[in-house]
Amino acid sequence: MPGLYVHIPFCHKACHYCNFHFSTNLKTIHRTLGAIRKEAELQAEKFQDVSFTTLYFGGGTPSLLDLSDLSELFSVLRNLYVIYSVESTLEANPEDISSEKLEGWLEMGIDRLSIGIQTFNDAQLKIFNRNHTAAQARQCIDLAKSAGFSHFNLDLIFGFPGQTLKQWDDDLQKMLEIGPEHISVYALTREEGTAYDQLYKKGILDEVNESLVSDMFYLARERLTHAGYLHYEVSNYALPGHEARHNSGYWSGDLYLGLGPSAHSYAHDKRWWNFSNNALYEKTLFLNKKWYEEEILTNKNRFNEIIITGIRTSKGISIEKCKKFLDDEEFSDWYKKVEDLVKKGIFNLKADHLIINPEYLFISDTFALQLLI
Ligand code: SF4
Image (cartoon, rainbow, N blue to C red; front, side, top):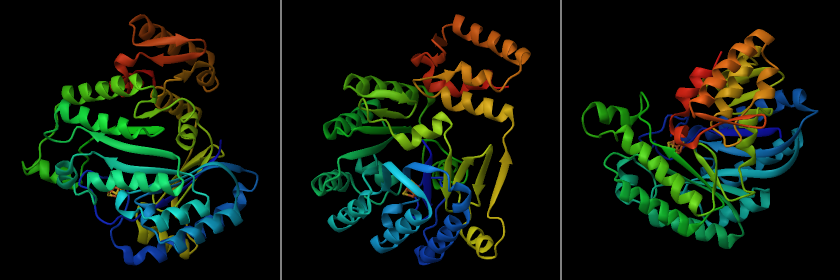
């Protein structure tokens, strides 16, 4: 399922934990949108034979765009690319959601909203510089439902400094009362260069200990699966039949084209990533220079990708797919490691798939390292 992604690199303000690429200088939006349109034009020829089945506006905060700007971008994409979208998602923050915008998004063909709720605890929202309250989050969902949206992903974060297991359980209960078809649940991480990192280094904010974070991860799994959600990827839960198609494409190794600063793409045995700097991205595009870096994927790269993405999913790693990228000797050496990990109870083998035992899902990255070549 080929996917088309557009990165809108702007936010009203910086959340203290965030290390995505964005700018809070909203005066430059039109220049950046112009560059994204130019990139879309330049890439179109290479993707003439591709029918994109998912469309995803991410960021940053795409919901802050004026309706006219988003609609223009939408038409440019529809004119340049073949899009038979079965899922068109827009990432939105609660403070941007109004009846007018909801109506406009529906008219454009957006049929799924991914809303950053993060927590229903106002104190934690404030400490991390989120631009909305818990009440706003609840109201915007009601508003979106009454406007006609029925497909939602809601994001939650756990592991805030000082957060207790009980507070996390409250967040999960509140989320279940809303009952969206899809829930993403992320552990807060302290990334180098973020405000959180600086506040931690100054001793102002703490870090939650690893074992409590692990308990929170498994509490989410218990509560959400008990309520009927499938834990189909380490950070993602869906009611049956409502798995995110766009993201599932990334995890299954499907082709995707990413437009906009910092966007990544994968197609034609190549991976490329646009400059994560709005000014540099715009300048290179307008000067007809290269606006991205790229790498040609070797068999080893492709094999390792299958491991890294597959290990995080409930479908697991396809042994057959792995085999395609190794010679007989490499495969036999690698398979010995697989057998050993299965014997230790870390993985299960089901038909052609190697699936991590849920008990080890929280630390799946550690086991991925053992399976890479
Ligand atoms: S709104 Fe999203 S992208 Fe923007 S700073 Fe906050 S977490 Fe990062």
